[in-house]
Image (cartoon, rainbow, N blue to C red):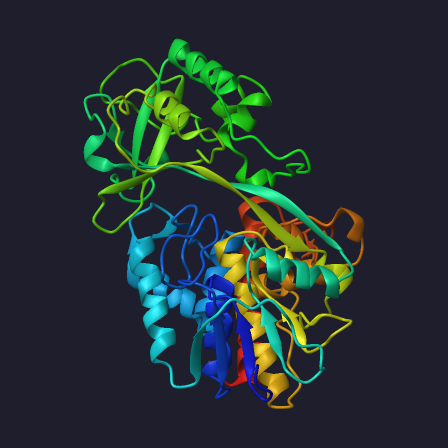
Length: 452
């Protein structure tokens, strides 16, 4: 690994964004990626920034939604990931979803063509502790075993893990539209954004019972599953109560079945997975069921009796470090400041959050290589709030992965009523105020960076 160059391990969302942010600031980058020499259990493509779970980057509403706000902040900061999303997006109502193959290809091409980025196909198993070679570890939640062992040595074993499941994808043409129909909840967005499959009461409970009785992937004796609540396997949700799914991914609200006057008791939704709309992702159906069980049980859903699966669900182990205990505000390892971490290995959760932390790491590293002081994004922004979560030492013992949400933002000032009393903002008014404040404060930060 070269000195006076930013070395980045991993070309996932975080590593790709970090490489881009350093490169556009005139810094030479060595981007190390073990694919195609070696693949993790969940990765299949040779391209960078591969999306292995959903193809959705979630809500794109930057006036009322925290992740939508993060989208907009990243756009204004020159994010490669957001450029790729804009170029390869597919209809998804108010969400930003992409054609996963086109998305990864776009990112890969941009990185390979940049004059400041040197792509090296190699698995990295050791990290420099010389204090001089700036290295960003963006190996993700599927870090290779050899590198994980090396990281554990450097952080004295202070790490945790949880298990993340992947939802199945079916071919659109195999869906029975005499039972299924196109509609977004409450008719938001385009009417073709989602395909809906209705279940009556009897069908719903038969489906739940089948989930509860199905054969599942077994864990090793030494493994203790710790699921992230935002990505629970469908069968784990069912285990929490037979009605749980009706209030989660199978809720029937905001939909009208054109094939029947009877209101659906539950509904399964399928979201567009590629630009040609030949593939549909079963929304919220992450699973650790065995493959044979998936095909048997998911074909119990009306409209999917003859479904052909382009990809079945799967499960993999996600690893992350206790960032508040180990990293400083610039994502540097406190014990070895030349080593930085970015992406989901830090404990941020989600595609967008991973890329955002990569964005910050790439900028920080570029400044450090150029012997300039990095400037933290304002704490009031989504990016600043996400970074604050990674360095909050309030309760390191119970540190958990977190998506961006308004609960991470600093409180808003109280408003004075016409009668002179103070009141808190609530509801949509509160969300709008968070977003307006964030974007106003972001502008000042971008002015300092001279990248507006």
